[in-house]
Image 1 (tube, rainbow, N blue to C red):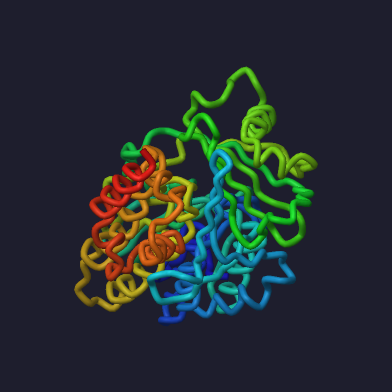
Image 2 (image 1 turned 45 degrees about the vertical axis):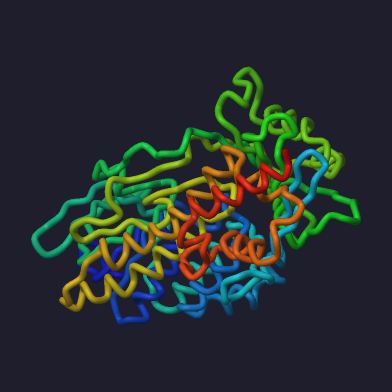
Length: 416
């Protein structure tokens, strides 16, 4: 371990997927990297349904092979697409039949095991990971950043030439540096837990995440993410008014599940494994994704919504983009973090945001549940839902809002 009160090239705050990937990429470039993780692994996290694009980013550090090789032993569920259900209508998106080049399959993972696998692999590569070490202050010096770090037993200073915040919902630097700004998305809440699903329905496809829409309130939706050991992640998302403050989190979740007939039927013998947890007001944004000697990765910068499982993909993309820019910065090469990191990252984020907004205002739901959008359009949408939101050869990436509006209008005309 690097000595306390010393200087390293890069400090990464957070050992989740973006922190692991960024630290691996920078270590491979020869830099001394220290990861400060406030929690102890393994630990619970949502964001369990990966997108195929994730595997491309992991491949850059050789981490995709580690995931593939350990998938069976760790209970990762093979995933090849997404299933949607609303009012008796089912739609299936096949990620292997998509517009963009690249892998079309991935996994549904329990994040405790997945994140620990990545972090342990990176540690074996020589990255110094310190668990239970929390950054409590950030002080920009002339040639370095001085971080105040606390553990259960001690407090120390650690200097770094550059800092990456990969703290996820902890949002360490946005809080310390007053970078937070209101999200453009409305406040929503999620209620979720792991279950032993006991699903016996023959037609149920465990290779896909199931996204269900409330039959009478289309702004309320559910996720069901099966794992290979017969368990699953179950959650419901809605605006705060969708939930009853006089009821427990457990009652809120299962009362809403009971209101969706297909999901209720699938889970009629399900049993909760852990207490229902809640996450409210999770959408977040910042005034800037970077500053003098720091940059924000993944959820520490902007988090949209869990509906299309884009969080881990955006986090890994941010790590992939930032690593070569930080490398040049440390080498003394002129860098422009806005042009080389923030702007290209936001292109994909904004594409996802278009589809998130269109999901809640029902335009994209009309598209998803339309019986026949045409094969080529379906392949373009499949690519985005598979995470390829930076492929500007795809018209629905390059012109997301205009293309989606036209498509939604056509579907609505046909349905009316």
